[in-house]
Image (cartoon, rainbow, N blue to C red; front, top):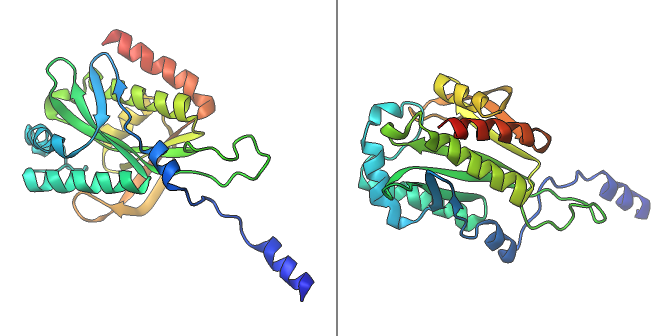
Length: 234
């Protein structure tokens, strides 16, 4: 019986992620503010509800593929959902604020935050920061679309992920029908990984296909140079 027990223990699949303590969650979801030249990404809270409502109302027709809140009640629910992810340690949501006038022009977040179960003795064992994450829930008010604000927001977040958290991968998903989003992800250096069928509920409440993109830590220097060049021309 003893040898059989050992065999069972050896064959048990290793956990892909590990449970984190309250201290670790607080480090991951601590208030992070990212400062750029044109925008500031500040921790999303209930004080941003009115600003998000105004930003989303500028041109609702733009959000065919994105779940963007319309009206006060939806904006409040949107913020509450984002904060629940923050409190669970799985998301870090931001309000995107334009520096020129302090207006809220959109929102974005780190989410699907992963911590891998590195074995004792591995250089990454015991890390408190994420090993991988996703950037998503990104939207901008109509006048800010196709401006440097989006590029700078991505630059700020990717820099934080790769250089502060030292993640190994940042991934993105977009509705397969959203050609504008796909082009934007390719533009910032995202590598197309494939199509996930019936992956998530779409903004129009159907099971959407998602296109998956990612940037790896080895690809980050080249991607950062490209983003810096875009910012220099803005």
